[in-house]
Length: 154
Image 1: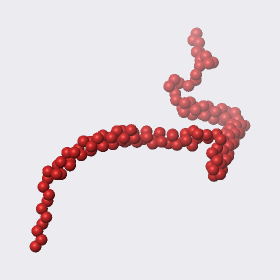
Image 2: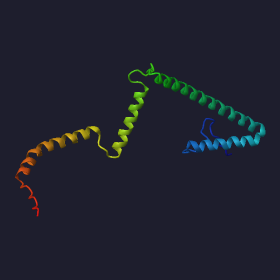
Image 3: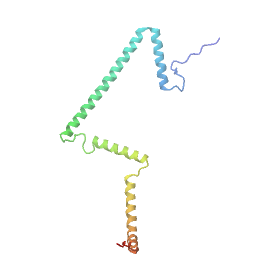
Image 4: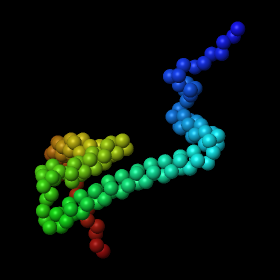
């Protein structure tokens, strides 16, 4: 007698190595197959569930946008009146935003091979040192050279 082997109830039905997108696709196909078997009522229920979920997500997103718009309007109004928002203080959101922007610009310039401000300062100091070292020799060289003859008029 051969016994039919059944998978344990907790076993994963998807083949190993299947990526999440493939799993979602397979789940969708399974849902569609069940809907075909159960008829249009199941399909209508899934459509309604999908619409409800979409409405909830859209409502949540709209609420977050409204909250952010309200906060930004209040901050803009305070700035227009010459007031610094209380939450901003010395190192508030604008300073943080400016710092992030500057940091990103510096990183982008470094990736392109541009020198940092510190490296430029060091280079400038070296050039000034070299200029000071060459200054005495330049003056003596100029004294030793003969002046150019003026052309004769005539």
